[in-house]
Image (cartoon, rainbow, N blue to C red; front, top):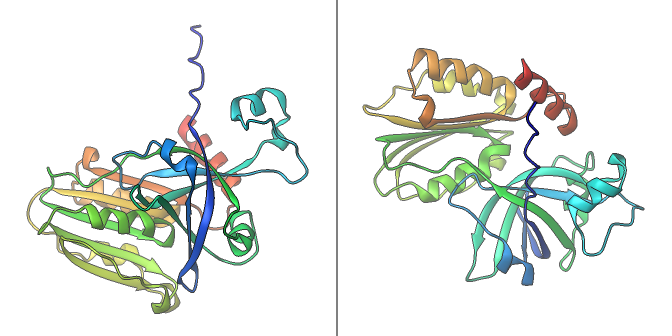
Length: 268
């Protein structure tokens, strides 16, 4: 059996929190910067994402901080916990990188952190990654997601070519969670409210598709993503190479449980 290629290390970026902003009642933006931002590579994707590292309390890590050394020398339970977040924007001129967090209270890792983080606190990022950006090949664009996908949807709308038709469906808790979305495209934005049992799958199914080739971005809770995958591929004939679709999370599962489930599915 051939040896597997060595795992490629993702670049580590150390930033300092500059400020936080309450975008909506349940969306908090953390804006970071500092000297480390100059080394952050960035990429061309509008779903550009990073792994935010949460050190385990009480564990002493090597200095300089190095994930390869940590994985080699420390037991797994001492490795920093990682959570994936989309970069909402990267502004080299202002020296800022922003990440939007959906805040549901003090459960989990990110919730307590984002509630207490203050200017000057350190942020450790691995990445970036990404796979989607609006293509000039498409005649029109379809963007679908919930709160977890909203940062990528907002960034994608800002990159849509001027005048390009866009249909947007975003499911949020209620009207207070809606955000102003900027674009040069000809966008029709539909907000679906969970409090009113408005169904994002039904809304997309009912959409009259414009003429021409569509590029679609569909991300969020795995249940509705799975339904829309079948609908778009089998019933609408969307080209696989122009479909970016993935479950960011699954209802009733924490991040580790969902990653294990996805890994198991990928092996079958």
